[in-house]
Image 1 (tube, rainbow, N blue to C red):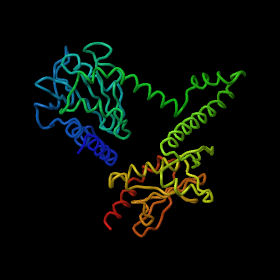
Image 2 (cartoon, rainbow, N blue to C red):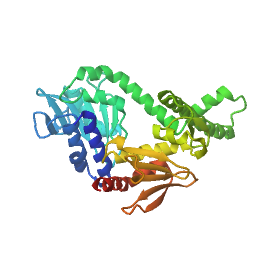
Image 3 (cartoon, one colour):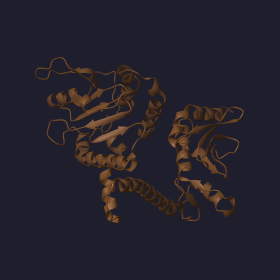
Image 4 (tube, rainbow, N blue to C red):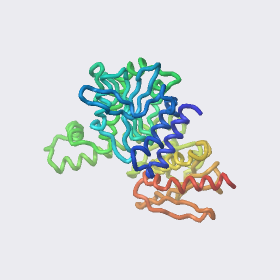
Length: 366
């Protein structure tokens, strides 16, 4: 398997099994040891490569342990501290990492709960672990730009100098992306006031703040929609398709070749929304644990948005009923009888991942 395929396979395992993992030891066995072995390429059963419960006396602290030390040529290179998968990660969880980082040759420290991996080095002060990670890998939301840097830590191509040299940019670009994402999801008062000040000359009261907070969110959505639409039109060279955003505003866009073919006939009355496309990609991501991505396709109709296996109307994987205020996910049983399940937003589709995979498996068995 290629590196990316191994990473995706482990991500699928985490997604499927996380709910059943309740303890730190179970997290190590199910997720973290496979990460060290399959992704980084180190033999977790070879003490010359991976030392569990690594101990080094630190000042007055005796017999404290860090969960794993990854070795190369007899020297500690990477320290790993583990927490249970059902818990979050905080810098307070890394006390042993801070102490061990200073008394070993390790240049990389990892704090993880099996899903999220925070990678640290010593950019701020030599031989002292930074408080902020330079790389954050979330297996349930993998940033593809981080994969080349993660590869550099694998046994096969271990390149610590290259990792550390790139760490400063990774650290700050990653932190900025997370801050921008947080602002996009819920804009802060400071940001709303800043942009409102560019366009509004009146007194900025509480009522104005509430008004511009809503306007700011709407403007952000429209800006992103327009940028995505522009790139789609450039890529496919077909500006005729109208894509309706979730807040009702229409803009020009193209969703896919099959959608273009169906929607160029203006008499169909079909309008593909961004939420439908987002729902399609979620169902596709779920189904890809069973089949290759190119086998999952979509067709939009007036009443519902169909997601099909092999572009075959006789093999519906799911249907999205998003044309009314209440959204429904349509799932089909072995007799192809449909059950419509109400959902509040597209992310709720993940709650029905097992049923979607089961539908795909039924078609593969036929």
